[in-house]
Every structure is written in structure tokens, then in C-alpha cells.
Image 1 (cartoon, rainbow, N blue to C red):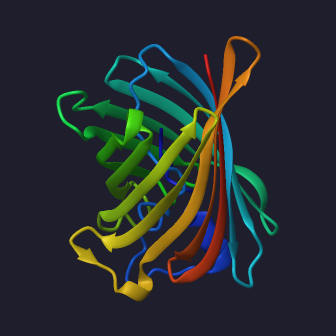
Image 2: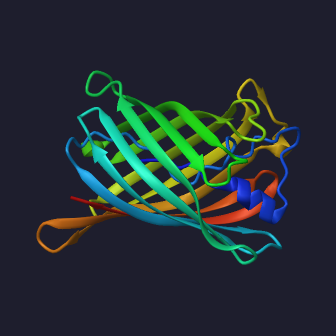
Length: 253
């Protein structure tokens, strides 16, 4: 449903990450949450979750979040989020606020549903200013009853009113999963940050992560349900080996 801009700027300051020839940390933040096409008109959702990074030879970093989303129309989805950041050295704090708006461009007309994703993030630390992220979200279902789902997203992001705005960055996300039943789906997800959109960083300085994800919908009583997603990734975050755990819980009403 959505992808957040992670508070990687403070993460880097805490753990000494470096991006060669770039100070545009917030715009090149790693991806943790897959954005998918959304078209449930009138549905409201309260959402919570977290990501946890464990970098080799470093303390773990935890980022919880809460959010509220609304399907304004069959094509327009909007959401507000607050993200926190916890480190052993710095404790816990609210790190940033995000406003997401996604608009579905195609529906039943073509096999692949395409939406335009946008995300505006305001960091509490004025040195990091704002980040604006945008790009196409693509989703297709195939197989019997559309039980297999494929996603591929390309996002561009740039910092504004920051101490170092920097050039526009390019990222990607993908997913391939199979719904065995409404309560359980199993799939693969991948995320990556390539560097400047028109001048990719050397391979060794890029970020690429791959992991397994499980998801589904669990009923709560007779009329409510919780949507869950949990994933575990391995790979690199800006040339640093890291393992990441992601959890998302959504309560539609």
C-alpha cells in the first residue's frame, strides 16, 4: 500500500555511513515498505509497524511508525504518517512526518495497473528539510483467480530546504508473491538505491536488498480484520552489510 522514506539521515550519523560524493542522505533513504496499487474507495485504515536494521558490528536501529489512510475515490489514495527512530546512543524520538498521495492511472483497461506515487516528508531536524518522492507504481495479477501478484516500482527523490539539497536520487522496489488463501501469501521482495537518477553510483556504493515476505488478512470477530505483512531482508545499505526485519499491521474500517 505504501512505501515510506526512512529516517536514514540520523541512522547514518549514528553509525558512520557514507555515500561517496553525496550529501543528499534523506533523498537516497533506503526503502523498507513496498508501495502497491490501492483502489478501495471510502475505506479508512489505521496502520502501525516498524523496521529494524542490524548492521554488522553495530547496534541495532529501530524505526516504529503510525499512520492513517483514506481511499478518497476509486483512484485517489491519501495517507499521513509519523515515524520514530530509536538507537541505543540517542534513545527514542519522533523523526519525521510524511504525506502520501497515490493516483491510479489505469485499471481494467490494461493487464498492468499503473499508479503515480508521491510522498512529501518533513524532518524534525531543520538541517534535513523536506524530501519529495515520486514515481510509477506497477502491479499485475495472473494465474488462477489472479492468485499470483507482481509489483515493480521506480521512484525519484530529492531533498529541499536542507543543508545540502543534492541531486535527484533513483530507487526501485519489486515483489513477486502468491496468495495461497486470504490468510496467507508468500513472496519475495527487493529494494535498491542506485544513486543519482542520471549518473548511477558505482556498484559497490549502491544498495540492494532481497528478502522473504509473508502477508494476509486475519479476521477479528464477525466484522473486522487485520492486514499483516512481515519481511526479512539481507543485503547492503550504502555499502554496509545489514539484515532488516519489517512488520506492518493495518486495521481498515
